[in-house]
Image (tube, rainbow, N blue to C red; front, top):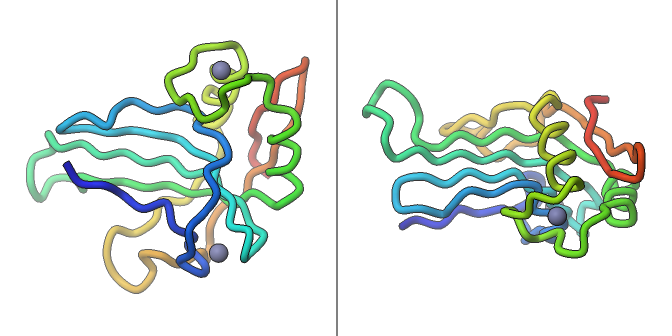
Length: 143
Ligand SMILES: [Zn+2]
Ligand SMILES: [Zn+2]
C-alpha cells in the first residue's frame, strides 16, 4: 500500500491535520478522503479531497486524483472553534457535524491538481473556499 503526502502546495512543508471531514480507507485498492490542512509557515489552509482508485483501467483515468481549495487562516480558525464534534480527526464519524461538513465540502468549488508536470504542486489558480457556522454546525462554501 502506498502512502500519500499532505504536504503544503506552496512550501512543501508538513501541514497540520485540522479536520478529517470524511475518510474511507485506506484499503488495498482504494482510499478516499477530504481533509482540512493548515500550513503554519505559510499561514494558509486547504480543503483537500483525495481519491485513489486502484481499479481503474490503465490509461483510461488517473489512479490518483486530488482536488484543492484554499482556506484563509481565519477560516481555519473559525472551523477549529465552530466544529461541533469532539473527534475532528475521525474521518469515519457520522455525527451531524461531520455529515454537514462533508455534504457541504462536496459542493465547494475545488481545483483539480495535475498529476504530472511542473504544476503538480503549484498553488496557482486554486479555488478558494470559506467556512460558515450555521445552526451550530460548521460548513463549507465557495467564496
Ligand atoms: Zn506552506
Ligand atoms: Zn463527528
